[in-house]
Image (cartoon, rainbow, N blue to C red; front, side):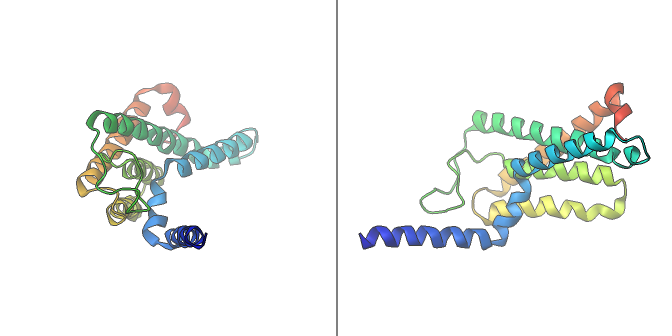
Length: 187
């Protein structure tokens, strides 16, 4: 009985340590659930202010741009990433038994890094100013965190970063070409 209690106590302490690990916190910036929830919240804020007739309609146009670039690019990069994982089926170098951060999924490419680069490229584009170059430090840190947590290799992360940027640029090209979208988005 005491062995079972000690095992449960160890698991509890392990989860407490996981939450305090700075790499674990940073890696969540690439979690698609975070960005999906943010896009939904911003969508409803945009709907609310769209009904207003005053000058606030124009002030919140960036929300539509964010949802288009960050939301759709994030979803697309995640989808392409999952297809690539199924095509290549490269197992992770870690195991759930030895590494609490390790997931039971395939390794190549890094989905968190792909999502982070797609989203932060969208944010950088929305800001429209080169002085915000530091925004790209965050997805780079997400990639580093994936390696630091031993759930990905450098190759997984580099491919994920390239994938995220590629999807973003495809969306940028598409948005500029489609008149309906480009009319409602600040380009």
